[in-house]
Length: 125
Ligand SMILES: CC(C)(COP(=O)(O)OP(=O)(O)OC[C@H]1O[C@@H](n2cnc3c(N)ncnc32)[C@H](O)[C@@H]1OP(=O)(O)O)[C@@H](O)C(=O)NCCC(=O)NCCS
Image (tube, rainbow, N blue to C red):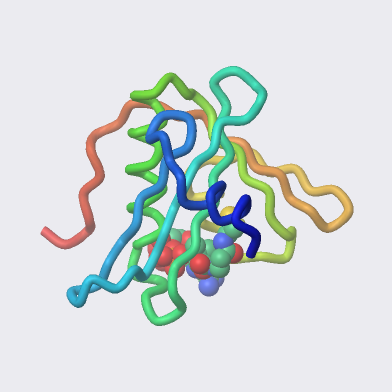
């Protein structure tokens, strides 16, 4: 970890570089989703990771949904993501979000339009 990489990962302007963190009830971080503006107007690249013990309860879906709302507020209308094509969890997550996915040489590139929807609500009441 170089000081430059650390600064890149942790210094956010909450407009062109934005992150949302989920914490457990002790305050420990258990998931993070972030976007970063690309050189293309209105397009941001996203990344999301959830701690293994917290997977499959909808955390990534909730964070990506909220990230999309934040991105729309800051003038973005498209998310892209790049990942290994055999990463089934992320492929299915993006498919559920309506992403278009193109695979070449084992690398998948996904693109999804952001639209205004109802605020995120979990399935529980
Ligand atoms: C991909 C990842 C972020 C998903 O996080 P998550 O919180 O478990 O995802 P969610 O609970 O919101 O799941 C949403 C949907 O994604 C799909 N999905 C998630 N995990 C899956 C798995 N292991 N297998 C198949 N589909 C999966 C399902 O369609 C799921 O909906 P469902 O639970 O109603 O079937 C998580 O597995 C992760 O951190 N992976 C390692 C990091 C990574 O690869 N990040 C992507 C790089 S951008």
